[in-house]
Image (cartoon, rainbow, N blue to C red; front, side):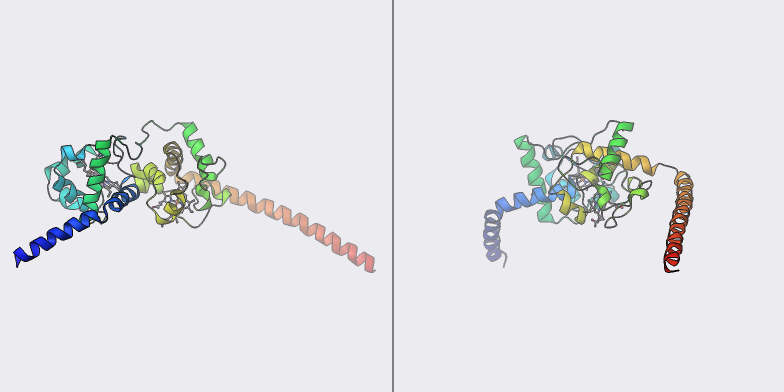
Amino acid sequence: MFPRTAPRLALLSVLMSLLPGGLAAQDAEVQFRKSCMSCHTIGAGRKVGPDLKGLGQRRPHDWSARFIQMPSSLLDGGDPTAASLLREFNGTRMPDLGVTTAEALALLKLIDDTTAAGRTLGTAAISRPATAADIRGGQQLFLGLTRFASGAPSCLSCHSAQGLRGFGGGRLGPDLTGASGKLGIGLVSAIENPAFPTMQGVFQKTPITAEEAFQVGSFLKSISSQPPARTDMVFPVLGIVGLISGMLLSGHLGRRRLRGVRRNLKHRG
Ligand code: HEC
Ligand code: HEC
């Protein structure tokens, strides 16, 4: 049995390696941009996870393939390399992303080829502390008062956030007040390389820069640390002001309408 299938398997693998060669490389890069680049670069420095440049030199290939397919099994299984990486990255765990064996091998080839060519993929996280100007700039971008360099639509067209209710905000995406707490240090990369399908559709055509993502992220972080009590105070006050001015306005209009009716009555009479 074995001697007969072995040549066939060999033939099959030769055919497989001939057929989708170029395509596989392209697919791997698309997948890397979509699933990995929010946390990793190749050659541009560390982000949420390590810079993957030179991975092939520091880890055995089959270890990397196993890790990419199911990090949880190594992170939870007492693997010493995984444990020390987890410590180095402050307990941030790489999620299981449902990567198949074939995809993992193609991704590893992409990492090796990119390293060998001295090319870089991705941009490193900006690590300077956010200034008041960053936060203000981020708010302007969020609201669409400053345009993204690529012409991407403002965040407000699909999202709302605390403190912006005066501006309304889109309903297609969730309210982003808590996004910083939810995504933590991954927030800026998630904005720069969104993994969310609806956003991907828009931002793949008009990507935003690392600097713009940093500013919007800084703004979102600033509102998430606002004590909720403050907005609880502001909104009722705004509400009351709105109510009073509404009453004054309608009172005024009402009086005018009344006058008009009286005038009509006079004319008739
Ligand atoms: C949400 C962030 C995140 C995403 C997305 C992510 N990783 Fe990771 N990755 C990490 C972190 C953090 C580590 C360090 C180990 C740990 O703490 O889990 C890591 C470690 C690794 C390592 C080991 C690196 C080394 O130096 O040994 C490889 C390889 C790797 N990731 C590849 C990938 C690939 C390929 C993808 C896309 C399919 C991906 N990662 C997606 C966060 C991420
Ligand atoms: C075309 C509409 C659209 C635009 C424009 C848009 N988003 Fe989104 N965003 C969405 C949708 C829809 C989701 C929900 C996830 C999905 O895509 O399925 C989302 C999800 C998110 C999330 C994850 C929220 C969570 O709770 O997990 C973040 C963070 C985010 N967007 C930030 C932004 C920022 C910052 C901008 C501006 C640079 C922006 N988005 C612009 C539609 C948009």
